[in-house]
Length: 244
Length: 199
Image (cartoon, rainbow over all chains, first blue to last red):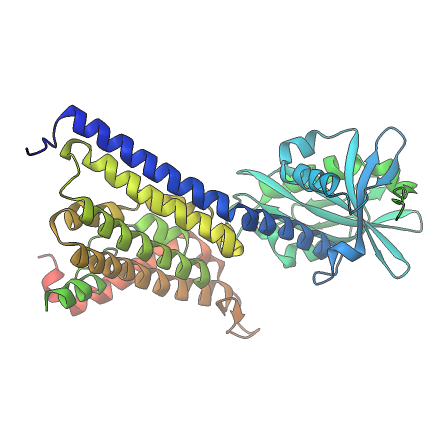
């Protein structure tokens, strides 16, 4: 008996079988590649942090301490890097840009120690012209002033050649050595028409004004939360786990 | 004989981009640099080849009323596979290609070849036709990306080619320049192929 391929029953059975096969196939692929994909995202975050600190090829795991600044007492509480649950929680927060922007109480921060210098690396998050922009700012305290050691920025969909230039070394290097605060005023910014005060300002991107405005807001909103900590850093090491 | 004609035809004489003017949108979007253009080309070759093969294998069993839906499911599945693999093994490139990998689903070349060729031809012929059309697309993408990266950034595959004397022309980085370059390619192509010239 020939099958009627235009009957409703045939069409429905055909669709169901197709969906089950395709669904299973995609589920298997997605699950089996998930670990690799997550590792890529994590690695990108670590490389960005090391790049902001000026040591792109350095080993994140040995050179960087991570933890939270408690906004209540402006003290850094380190996380035991062997505690994978806490470490994962920090990186998960960094990936969740909405939650990161809303964080007020426990502010994630990385501390990079190199020779005598201590660099504080702060996650940045904001809005550009078309979508999210984010990055890391590496800051140092020199003679009571907060100085930029390096900045790394990335974007979701800024205009190539214009706003998207914020992700290039050329733009990011402009920030190196600039002071963040003039007195108590937040002064670090990308200035349209060219930097007027070389101590605090960098040239904005011609044709990328809206993105640069977004960068200015991002810098101020993200760094301001850490202001009191940066001016007077108090650091509490994690309690060492007793080794048997 | 037929197989080889199936293969060579889409490369030039019936190229999907410069003759059929299909798939222009992604040709504009991913040709700022060579590397993403090459990866995009490979991805499209994979998708056109296997969507043609699978649809050709299924062609006698697909209920004609839901033909287009079945095609979309097959194409979308292949595109998701490509996207997932890129995210796992070529993360940087996958970031540069961003949404355009997903948009291969809407690339007229893929659907066009399935509908026009695979549903009426044997699996092997369809597979060759898919590969050839993918290569035809990739070739144009690579030519456009070559000029855009060379004159827009002074580099090829990210390596500095033009010296410090060259000021990169950022106009090349804008999508309209891709359209103009595609136009130039069509112009050159048609001046060699008299039968394509409209009266």
